[in-house]
Length: 148
Image (cartoon, helix red, strand yellow):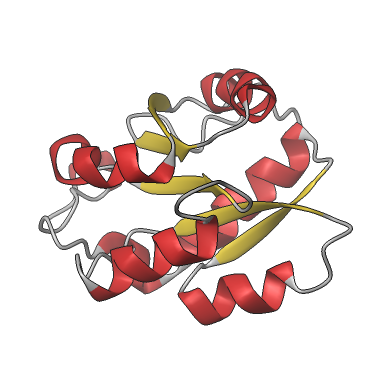
């Protein structure tokens, strides 16, 4: 499969909460390759301020951040905002507790670093294939191909 041609996020917004510029620099071109409009929010506290305005279709969040870490951020999204948008935490593959803590907080997936375009594409497909991925606090998203 040619992942450069697989525009699985065409017409959708991907939001990235990050502290590390290197994570931003890795994910932003991948989002572009798979067709996403990217909303960069910086640290998680900044993202919380922008979430309702941006209305992302999928959220990527760095696991390890100061002030508000990834699991706490996702937990707050689920609890306070009641947001069902797919949330993917990006964690170091050396952190054995990251997947368990991430899922307990409400993350749909964990993307282990280092990762490839194929890894991001596979995780996005899994996250968006879930029925709850299409029901947002902001209202339902239009279905592909203009279906009602």
